[in-house]
Length: 133
Image 1 (spheres, rainbow, N blue to C red):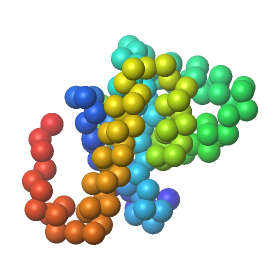
Image 2: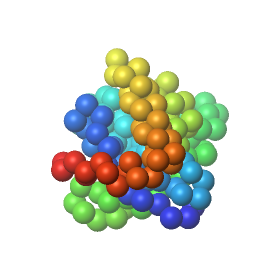
Image 3: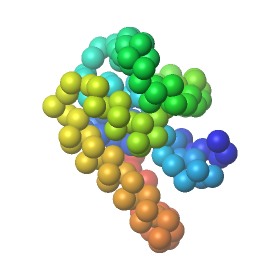
Image 4: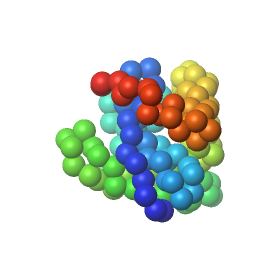
């Protein structure tokens, strides 16, 4: 992967770390952040570790194809984080029993649409002020 831009996106007031890969023109999302937002599990890292093992044992290739990127953690340090692109993420979400799955899929589509609009009209990105978190 070439240049990635770290970004924070919000889904229902939950912080989702994302990275844009300019070369692949693809968004990558922190899987642990997604799990935290969808399950509200107090330990999303453990949830992901158990889920990842179960999916691997079932022969699910989605987990095998996931990447790891250095992303800024809550403490401000860059740490290697499991990430998934949109297609992989949708497959992972199917394995998470959560009533928030459908709203999350809609949010994911909105993130993609915003990126397409930015590509079509780059000035739109400049004109929109950054929202403080």
